Length: 347
Image 1 (cartoon, rainbow, N blue to C red):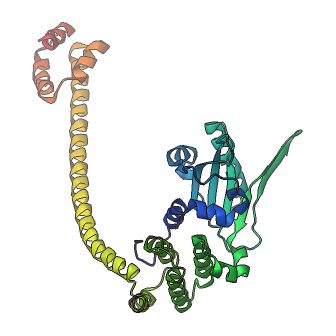
Image 2 (spheres, helix red, strand yellow; image 1 turned 120 degrees about the horizontal axis):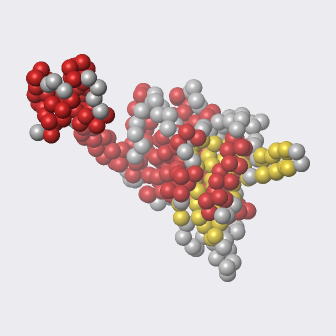
Image 3 (cartoon, rainbow, N blue to C red; image 1 turned 90 degrees about the vertical axis):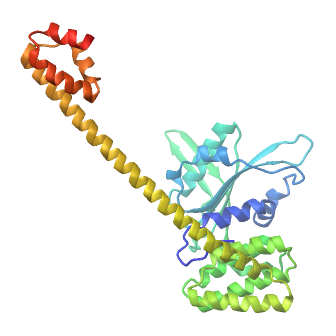
């Protein structure tokens, strides 16, 4: 279950989770023409490790999720297709360039161009990126990618309600989350409506729980409205004799309390360990500075006592431990020449 709280800003987790669980449904819902060309009887592979090498953390941007997926095209030749799917949260000036950059990186890595697909989740109806191009002294490039805008689905609300595809619920959730941003009562009611819809669609228990995780994460409620939501959902589940969500929620809450206690203990132990490490490091640094000062003083004293010393002699002094430095400090009083120092070092 998703963590509860009103300050969650990481939208990446629910989108990535739902895309990984229902990738075929996502492509069929948003990009039907492309879905028809894919052989869904063959395995899907999420190329996470490879994609991480192509997308440094410094370039994350304002996205909700991105995936690089290997699928197979229909036909007897088993042609491999790479799909780069990006879920973009907000308008971004460099977004088309970024999609093009990933295409180049993916092509360079795999020696194969990906199918670039974009889901736009922002609230700006006029922002609709779909291409990147440039012309430089006779050289030019035109790169087009396929994008869909979630705002456009609001006009087809009845079709969303009638759809059995799980991503109809995903889109409805996102649209209502935007619409009820500053209206907690309306959001609570829509959240309850969308969750009830999961039961009414006849989804399996696992699908209900997966979709609820998405709904619960996206449609965050203030504490008072959250309490009302759980009370009303519990009554609804009891009426249907299907306590799927509330029972798991209670288990999640109980485990969450235990986990938080464990995390607190771990944080305390970690703080103690770091404190001890810093203390030891400070002690080591202090000892090293003291040792360095003693060596520097001895070298100056020796230079004044016996004159110029070779680099080799200085290097040998610089590796002496503190007890031998102290002995050398006493012995130098009897030195008359560099030979006396060399004799002492040899001993």
